[in-house]
Amino acid sequence: MAIAPQEPKLTPKDYGSEQDVRWCPGCGDYSILTQMKKALANMQIPKKDIAFISGIGCSSRFPYYMDTYGLHSIHGRAPAFATGLKIMRPELHVFVITGDGDALSIGGNHLIHAIRRNVDITILLFNNRIYGLTKGQYSPTSECGKKTKSTPYGSVDNPLHPLRIALGAEASFVARSVDVYTKHLAETLEAAARHKGTSFVEILQNCNIFNDGAWEWATDRKLKSDTVMELEDGQPMRFGKDGEKGIRLNADHELEAVVIGENGVSESDLLVHDSTRQDPTRAYMLSGMNYPEFPAPVGIFRQVHRPIYDEDVRVQVEKAQQDKPGGDLKALLHSGETWVVN
Image (cartoon, rainbow, N blue to C red; front, side, top):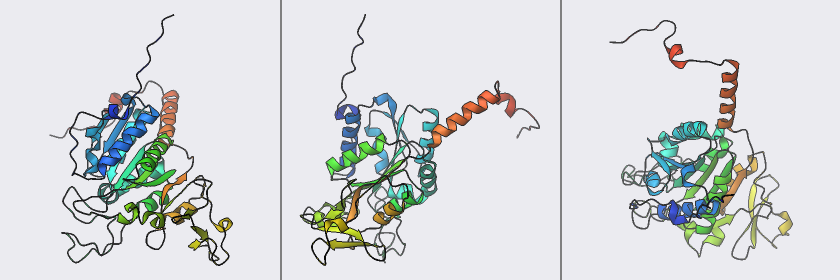
């Protein structure tokens, strides 16, 4: 009996294309690209089974740099392209690459509906709180008072919160990581890629040209222990240099930062993280924790099972074909009253 040759194991480098990577030196996108390749190599997904779909923006050059299928589509519409592709090619792992401006401004509606349908795709939102490609206008996630070329007196727009948009649409997988948290980012991307249904990952990413230091409080090693809290399933929510602080619900059922050992607070008072809670209320509350009032959580906020849109669509199409076989699309289009426009 002939023994079939084994496929060589893919390395992170194998997933990269031969294109020169052209982002600004120091851009956070480089790290995300590297961690994405590591995650794919760890899963050993064949390159022919991967597709990256992007919209418009700096992040959306991503498909050029991957040796997989890819499409640089139109502004804000990447989730729509990805939905169609996943329905017709269920064997593909489909990733959407988008930025805060692309996904949450012109693409807001497409993003929400892909998430609420729970299409089996992975959406990576690079959030640098600025329009970098067009040289520094404020974006939907820019903070109030943000001064840019387009808002010299400071933005008066209330910013959108990406995680709250996703959780409000009842996303079945919601996570956050940071471009420079390399190990955490690679693990988060892998978990998102393995999830069945829409997985949404917000990646806090630096634009060192037009919005440098937007997430400095999360990337400064001296501050990180007090400004960021890593969510771990089954573990109490602790932060601080020695884990001496934590999060609990107070008498008004609101989140409260406390110090263990002060005012009778013990570790048993702290909330224990559970990303599998079907009710998204707790995840929504956690997503509202923002620096400086709270440490900002990173990790998986929610991971649950829900019916998957593209699977249901295919089942429905197969049933329709069984119930009414022999359909002819051309005949249907030419049936009834038709006319010619000259």
